[in-house]
Length: 302
Image (cartoon, rainbow, N blue to C red):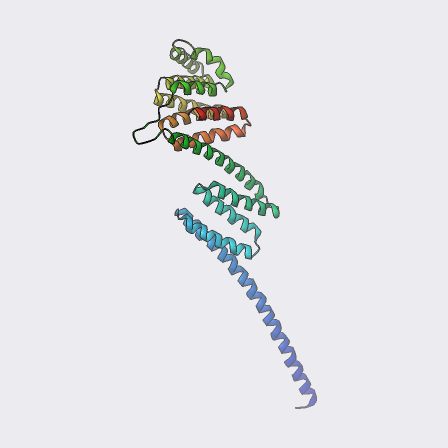
């Protein structure tokens, strides 16, 4: 081989080595990209498994897989998905009534959404406020349960409510409706049921739905004072339905308090929780601190 041919061969060998190195470099970057994709797929699948376990009410396994998913997203520095998984973990804890723990994860999620200026931060903030209200309501119910336990020293003991005293407190609740004060005089009559029934019938005839609902609350309260709790409950439920159709939130919340009170007398604490919690949420939405105060006063009498 001549000198020129040898130089050309060496040049081709050197350039071939560089090409090979370049291909290897490209190959490494490709593998890194594929590894990133695999990690993202792993995180997604772990989260999906966690959701499936949650739907089957296997909450320990659900949380375990969600935490594994969270760890992978943190490793990938995927802040948005990390926030999303934190939110999902909060939902699981909320489902098993560990509200304080749920709030902790919701707060972490909110901070991450805020750090990346995600529009989801507003939704997360609203969710936190709603769950805080649920927490407050559950604390009220816990107090109710503790109070109820004082009346149950053994299986034969039974809670005996002071119907007249409770009825008087319920009158104060009903009076929070402005229109109810016009009917108050009739409840003081010697035969209040007769007069209230007349008001109810007149309201129905003239199509005065609000008057009909208020008279039902007062009739129910009168029944409660004579210990006819189931009839009272029906009146309160009927009043709630009317207020709901009228989209009268104040009327709805007051009806819920009265309904919750009857359920307390019946010992149905789950329904007590639902009704008082919903009533308090409406009062807070309306910024009605007086109504909250009257509600707490009623709870102290139960």
